[in-house]
Image (cartoon, rainbow, N blue to C red; front, side, top):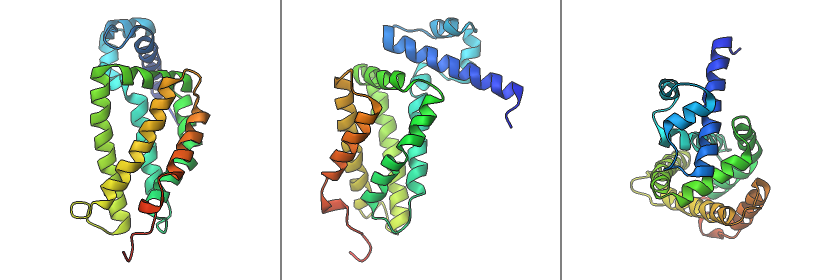
Length: 208
């Protein structure tokens, strides 16, 4: 059970996170200072740095949580599933759990607005691509382990993850382009696009 001290620390962290995302999405990432984030929560700059190393870390804090949840969902998929199906089902079946995790920290609408801010801010976009590449490598190695192949000599794990990630990026960018594009529409479009990838990567690799 969470202690009172732990609860207070969690609430302070979440308050800083929400305040930061609100400021980033309303006045811009580059125009927001750590002092402004701390002031919005009525804490000191020193307190902010107890929870976050800087603005970039707080900007990607929720995304880090969702990515970790997705990696865990892929790891939990039944071993008989073909790689692309495992990725697809981890994403779609884990959607509600991931959404609930996000909503426990910030409103989903704010999370989606922050994604638009990331896409439109060069410094954040560069960081996003760097972080995404690291996550994709983690998933590729996980798939390789599941399938009993060597990720450094067999291109299929990285190829499968690259295709999957490209589909998700396309749907996310469509979400960014439309203000009325909510989380359920994103899920539905992602499922439709994943279904269009074709059989090239959906077959079972064993015995190939």
